[in-house]
Image (cartoon, rainbow, N blue to C red; front, side):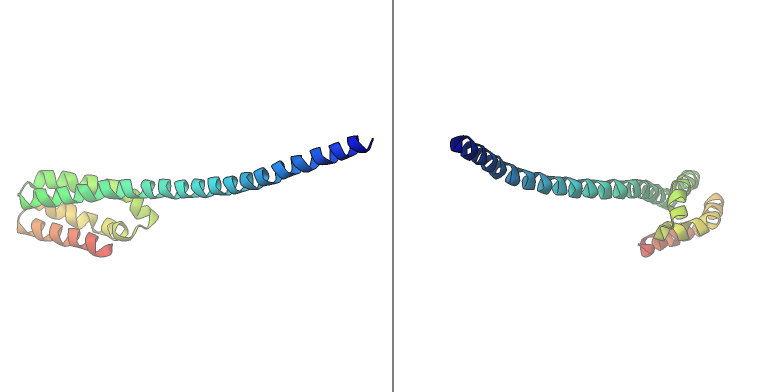
Length: 133
């Protein structure tokens, strides 16, 4: 009877010796997994912000380049496209695009007229975007 009880005690102690470190390892791994999930969530949030930002900025740069090449029709089209792509960012209050939305009518009107005023207006607008960052 003593051997059976001591055998059961040894079996329980052996089980606990194997179980406790594994459960501690499991808790540590769950914590790491939660941290990785949080990091991945932050990366997705940054991507949701940076991709529309990059596309809108590329449209404005394209409009500026077309203006410098005196292609005012293309510049007007690219600027309007840039403003449309920047609108969701402006609604969120994103720094340079919130101010850019206010200049939409002036920039589009200047590009529709063409000439030196369009070049100056587009240059000032693009610099205001970079200053806002």
